[in-house]
Image (cartoon, rainbow over all chains, first blue to last red):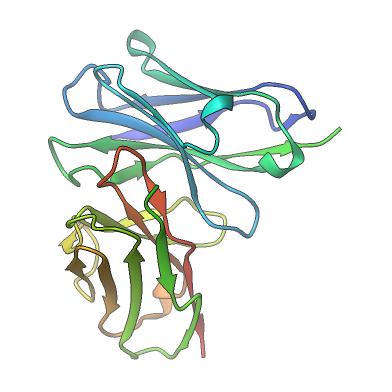
Length: 123
Length: 107
């Protein structure tokens, strides 16, 4: 059974750097075809894809946020970390991590999601 | 970037209605399209992948069709549990893109 859970601060100040951790179980990020993505959703708004990291360390970023994002993985800890610099109130959102696999199951879609973590940016 | 446009933004329907939501891509994405259902305060749930493949455990009243740039999600007979917001998402390109969502409300 695959599970993912996001963790990190609930409140950050403007200009600070946000660090979020996705801790997962039920799969390995060293398995070919597997990836973990980050998606966010401001209150009352649509989903926005942020970043993706694959088993082979291929990293992809939203073009509009690329300069502010870094995604890394720690295979031994079953964790993926997303950092976002220079936080602004418009970055207030629920942040989700999600599993993607091109080998089994849903062939590249985000098939399993974490519960999400709400981050508020305010001074 | 590939842009995804959903229509309508809001849909009012009754239990038992047949409901169709459309998603258009700004360029061809072959069949690399997913549909998700999201309820308030919950994470999105995958319904359909590769445009028309039903995710395990999802009721058969949900179906997806299309390829290239135009796709549809159909709910054959709307049930009370189906009132939610639905998102399409492309995964053809190097990046991922979601549509803006379609809220299905009770009429």
